[in-house]
Length: 125
Image (tube, rainbow, N blue to C red; front, side):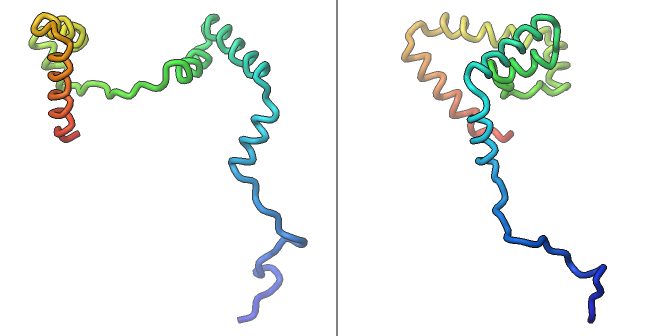
């Protein structure tokens, strides 16, 4: 089958050069942005966040506190807690106080936490 000039693949004339990689881009970025430059950027973001810029707050929070690693409760669990008159936050805060009251010894607390951790690791997600 003959190919005409329009359907033939076109090649770049000359020698091929390797494509820049993400490492090359990162190296260029690190060479171009000094620590003083970066400090100015962060200071500007802090100022903007204090003035009400929600994107600046989100950007700073991501780097300062990290992204949350927990999942939101399911709607049914929220309803169940409400029907029982419970608060998941209060329960979590109270659990340490309860544990302190039950066993004041730190070794006992550590043993209980290990057992609970092992049991939670066996639960399906």
